[in-house]
Length: 269
Image (cartoon, rainbow, N blue to C red; front, top):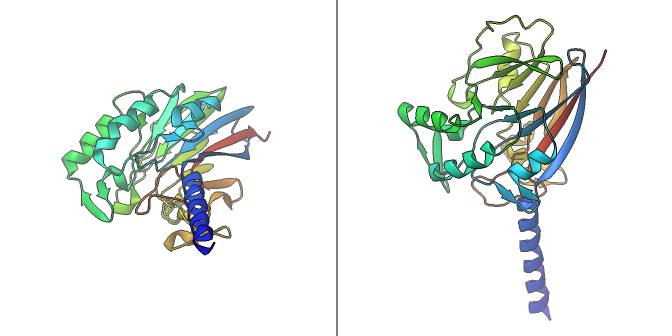
């Protein structure tokens, strides 16, 4: 009887871990901005680490079902370089005119378990070229002014700050009155921007995986100091840290399901 009980507990634990790892959850958040007319639907995905298929559908199927105006991918597409073509193929299926990507630390390295190999500068350039070969726009310390639903949106993307690659380039266009959407992989960029008085309306980041393992809503390990989801950093200035979709080091999640974030930005006029 004890053996049966133990086996039942083991099977239940395996099922739970599987479910928590492959059930991609759509989270929905609302923010207001005086720089937006009507409503903008922004979808953020992050930290795929080679994973494109989930119990709830493929990344493309889930994102397209949300009918986004802008899709933002905040880095770490793969663990192993061989995974990149399939991930890029999946993202190229997205039916969205504005699809932006910023590099993470895994665009600079590949991992197998706890072993890591950093790319050369030439390899890194090839990785970014392969990512941007289709419809995805790679932003690495650069911005782009777009018009969506009668709203001007200035999208700025930082290169990976883990390796000190980030810097801020002044826009060529007049962005007065535009909604400032800033993308970065690491949430540490917020402090870097604050020290330099660089403003934004909405900052999207990833990297932390929400801790990947959470007990009683709290992340285990070094990423516990970062918030998950939306936080108002200053009046009318918001930062969203995405839980990500894939895994690193350990091939499972606990109490921290994969996330696709839908952020509705509505006019506050």
